[in-house]
Each structure stands twice: as structure tokens, then as C-alpha cells.
Length: 83
Image 1 (spheres, one colour):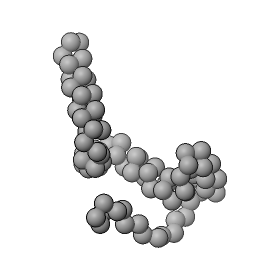
Image 2 (tube, rainbow, N blue to C red):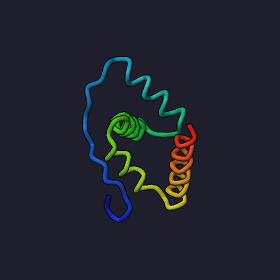
Image 3 (cartoon, rainbow, N blue to C red):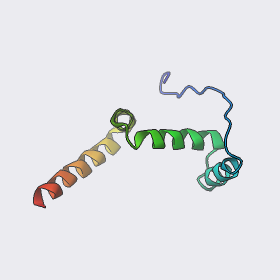
Image 4 (cartoon, helix red, strand yellow):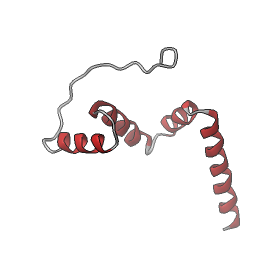
């Protein structure tokens, strides 16, 4: 990031024939351009098993959102202790 701005790099990808229409459809439904939707999808997939990616994402959130995550985490730990 540069002064709060995300630096984007233009690239080309080779995808399965059915992936582009699917990405376009989902991006349109969410009000995103395909590049931003694919970027988010890549990050989401990478984060499924990568604790560092998740931690970086959480650290990038506004303080109010971080407080909500902390509260949810505390609730989860409390529920595990009750089981």
C-alpha cells in the first residue's frame, strides 16, 4: 500500500472457459469489476488455510471492525470453555 492506496498491477491470466462468465456474473451481482472480484476471490481462497493472510487482513480493518472480531473471538473462546 502507498499512503492508504492499493497498488494494482495489470496482468493476464489463462482461465477455464467457464470461469470468465462466472466471474463476470458474480462480480456484477456484487457491484465489482472482474479484476477486483478475482483479487478478492484469490485472497479468500489463500486465506482459508493461511493464518498469516488472515492476520494481515484483520490488521487492515478499521478499529471498529477489529473490535467486533475481538468480541466474536472472545465469545467463541467462552463457548468452547462451556462445552
